[in-house]
Length: 317
Image (cartoon, rainbow, N blue to C red; front, side):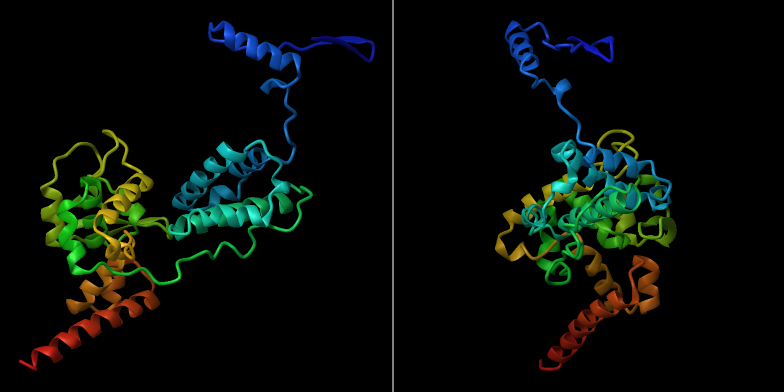
């Protein structure tokens, strides 16, 4: 295309990537003739893509913990893929709620999605000085499960032998390390060294040395090495949380409706109960799992009730 602008001749060329297919060449040619080719589209100034790219190079985002940045990046990648070139100012609260509703049975994922939208919206308004309206995700970041995570019952632990290998390995790592599911799933084999193991405090962004219990040492030793991680994608990379979570959900479904209330995160709560029933103090439990005092106290009550009810019932015989 050639045209004259301010007395000077201008030109623009659009390359048609027709891949040797005459039909594709014909299609692309007429798109360009009609001004509808991808290269002719006007890019939105206030697009999600522009905001995300600006946030990723902002010095303040670099100060966040690595695990936090990774969580935001995963959600931002999804937003870029589906809505990257759309004007983010046109996003409605109804649209955000509709997106969250699709993950009603995955509250952690829904919460992260809402929080990321809110984060980007506030960044665009405060740091980029974009003319943004009311934040459509305001107040939706606390999208949580209605009830606390349920610790797994004994019958479900006994069924782990029927689970896919990735789920079985993840379950044992979460249960015996007390780590959050993501940290346990991406655990390297060298993090267990004899009687000790290195666990990850995702919130604090640091690695801590913790005593490794005998059941986990035995389980880890029995696994055939297939890479640097316990659940490897290849020789150097771990399988991601989403892949293991999908396998877990499929296996949980095979166990029937009674298994539906339980999640991978529930194994971390089971760790508190098992440690409490073994006589560990709150401080000792926190040293293993890194969970807050209120959380430990909440699940200790369950452990105490189990222990006391067992002793009471045994007196009846």
